[in-house]
Image (tube, rainbow, N blue to C red; front, side, top):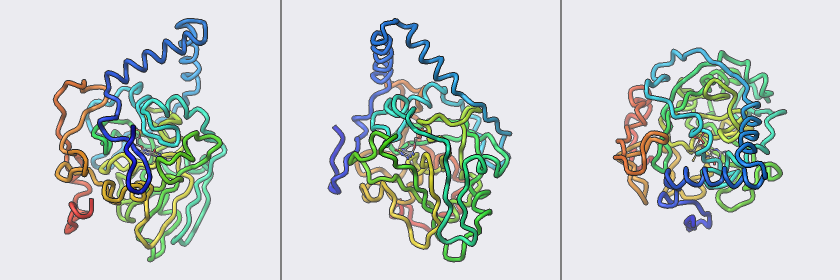
Length: 326
Ligand code: MTE
């Protein structure tokens, strides 16, 4: 059972995060169950797979020239990246988003950009897709729970959008609000988090060229479970900062109260920079397991400071006590 926090919110602890082998076994079992239920054996499952495949829309991007944007590490298999997800609006089990997110409606879709900006504007998703040249970037993603992936994203620097709206001198932080639609998202209304899922960055972090507004992965439009039609990817921070299915971007003067800070401020800080030296109160952050590569008995690999992006982002935190500002 997930742990109930003092705040009344509940969320899973790592020991409850399904071990990979058990998860894979269950996935296989679920496939058989689905095939059996259809009464057509494995052919039924194959047909469903083919339907899912048919929805794939190509979204190519040119290799990014942003320093650090292209790790040479092996990308996580797409099958893993699209079936082992955190998207609590669709359930807290890793397999839930792939199972449930087909109900997410991604057209029409708009993103309102407002607050401390000279030119507030609501962008239609198709206008956003054309706002800047699409780039492919291969980033490490380190989840706060202790696993990681290497993902080939398609998108452009969030700075391209910020340029368009011209933040005022009062803009110190940026808030990201994601969709919270109880009609299409079965777990909005559950007490796991306060909805909508809100995340935030300091303005300089939001303007950093590595901060990506992503529309695709693996050269294709984002699958719903990965945050379609538009999400954030902040590679040097724990994965929960990378908000999925964004509908509003708000420039503000004060540090935002994010969904995870509201749920458990002592466990999930505003910064949430990947840091092997600052443990989560309930587990170590020194090592990680790479999904799709490291079996459950494999030795865990060391977690890197700022997830390996220290050369690019370290200077933004000069003089900041990272153990207090975790
Ligand atoms: N965004 C929303 N709206 N809801 C969520 O539950 N989970 C976060 C983040 N963005 C989440 C979210 C967490 S904990 C992680 S690790 C990443 O999405 C996972 O992204 P992925 O499933 O594409 O790997």
